[in-house]
Length: 179
Length: 427
Image 1 (tube, each protein chain N blue to C red):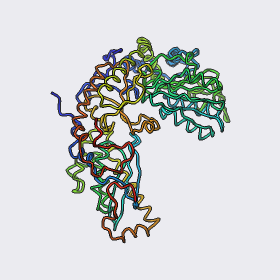
Image 2: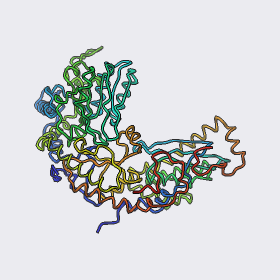
Image 3: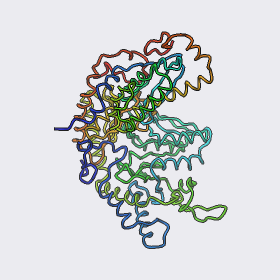
Image 4: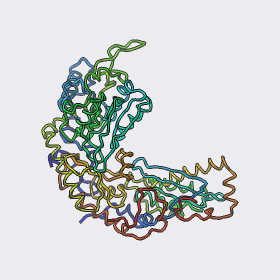
């Protein structure tokens, strides 16, 4: 008697899956870069930590609180950029922003962002776009932080690189708060 | 309902294919046709700059503008219309007191009291006053039953700035008692009436407070109009904080003298049409009667509280006694984030607020990031609450599975307090 609820286009199964079983939750300590952000609209928070190895994002974790859209988007973001170069990650951030602003059809998404098509429904709920973007804008800040730290203390990050662990995550269990 | 939904053009429309149920009146109320027409009429029939022209049109506009000032004074029981200052909103009214009266009065060692349930608009201005003057800012604490601990005041207390009714918990604050306590130590009381004045009869003489701030748009009037009521002698002693046209007596090359109260606080062109339409909103509320508005709010909010409590799936915030509660009900639904709840309700045509409601310190006190808030006004009835409750079937349809879900890998740690623990918390 009613049309299919519009919210079904928002809460796709893949989103609910990432919300239920988020990837890369927790905090890396030590980390090569970190960023903290809040959504002033709702008070949601995210902490992002990452490790850098040979020009790539070797590991990345997020923790904090948020709605299903922001948690799912954070989960998919970490999967999309983990193992990619910093430059590629920056391109992916811009691509995702264009998807959210309607400037890019989901059919044009690069292979790394294929899953993100599931977030296309957010565009019909403009106030929720900020939820979807939160993790991505936080990644921008973390990459800025990485750049600052590399200029300030090149030795330490070089040491992480020299440790020879391709994942750069020595013994950090998922969700570990620290040593 | 108390007022016919048919009086409110927007309430007859559909949202996302469903008839609109508007439950966000604590944010802003819908406007009756009479107010919308008064706004249009002001521009069509009487538009001129007030207090400026010597021609009939301007005189007519000025008369209507000043008549509204008299109407506002009567509405809150003020003896003198010159005690009414029109501002842009309640926030600006509070800032006027903070920047003018408080900065000139408070000094290091003085105490400024607010409460833990204040809206940012009645907290941040006082943080600024405390920072600039060195006065100490203290907070009346929220008790577990949703009421305020009125605490203790000393001769150092100079101002108590408190809401009349919480925009999150609905708590009606015993202003008269606070005024008694404050005046006994020589302190003044500012009441943030943004939620109180729209909901119940308010008489400043009976309340005994010194300042009262409120907003037109939360009581059927247009946006862009706020009110500061202050006792005449206080206004007379206050310096203006906005300078320019309309607030002066004489201007020379090197200096100026300022006009009389209240016009010296209304620099620049006034929101003439909005003020006049606000007068129409007061007429509309006057016809209903504020005592009837209060009874209605109590009935509908009480009904909502009862249904949410009986249901058992909701976490409720604020006092459970309808006698001390305004028409605001805040709650959470299991572990599902309020934004997700609000989006799904929106899909059912139901407008509720989700978030921190400009009360971040209160959210921290409650130990939550956000709540869902349903607030009612004269056009809402029990049928709107029934629609709200039944829409949670959709929330369960989408999120129900995951509330029973078993995937906890990667979730066992690393979550901040208050974060969403997706498994095992559903009730």
